[in-house]
Length: 442
Image: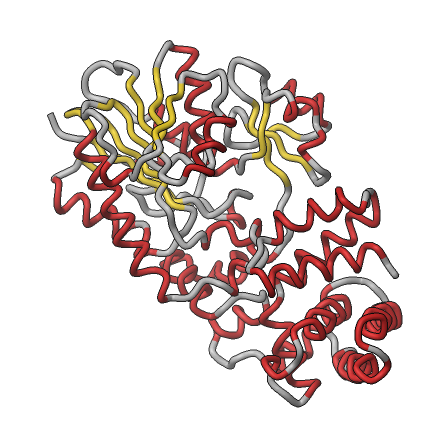
């Protein structure tokens, strides 16, 4: 059997059967099977790609099979998704895509179901991707773009709403969100510079964060600076959120008492901790789940960061913080390109509960902030109910001074109309991070 396709298929199966995360399952399988080079690249492209395109693949499979995908055995559906993905979204030849899929079905189910796979894939191969889009996509503009770029329509509409006057960019936004992203590293301040990290790893220095380095691919866990804790994997947008917190102007002196109220898994806390260490400052980091708190401890080892395993809404911490980061739990619509299966798991019903949590966390941060201090609220989602609506509610309730956050990510263009800042993959190459800075009146 083809080891690359076996790994991809096992990834699809884990996602479907156990609600596993593809970006956790697939790297483990690559290490376990000792796949490297072209085989690892193929397994990654097929595994992540088929997860990312699931909605489109299922529509084509249903059309070719003459039945709803819910009526197809799950393990057989995984094979069909893998085969149709190769046919429509890769340069793999049709003969190889069909034959390898049929071989997988025959090995597991026997000749009868292998014949079914063969028939469905041959029908799927009668049209190319553009022809299937023309046949199956909804007629309305947003629905059509959503299908073309493998997104649920409600998410595409959320992107269009967030783009506002720039909604004509929706196709570009969805296309960037559907592309495989590069790896972003963060150079830990005080340990290594981005220039040094780029030279050691063969990467390229980032455009916006002074600590960012871009890699085209590979396993960053094998890089010496990452193994030694001098660098870590972190999207450049997340780096900019942490940096904005340090740049926003306070009224009165910075006493060096900072708080990360939603710290898990620890990337922003580590960057903030490294910056705080330079000035002799201190970070409190809050994470309610013990296993995620342990990740924060590992990420911030050796830094002036104290981890508190408590609920951020009722932390018991003493008020008086100069700077507070609320990187709130959210739908994650801004990081879908890095979480291949996530777009098909989220539903509009998820939003209401998260918005309540986001408002409660921001309110708790406000109570812990000293007069003249700054809180930065951020989400890895551009969805308006989670971003500008949460901030507007906080301003209305507290009388907060909303600062022009765009000035705290200097040099980064096209951040929206303000005063919050919105990053986008198609504009900035980052995840779709939203951030807003609020200052407490004296």
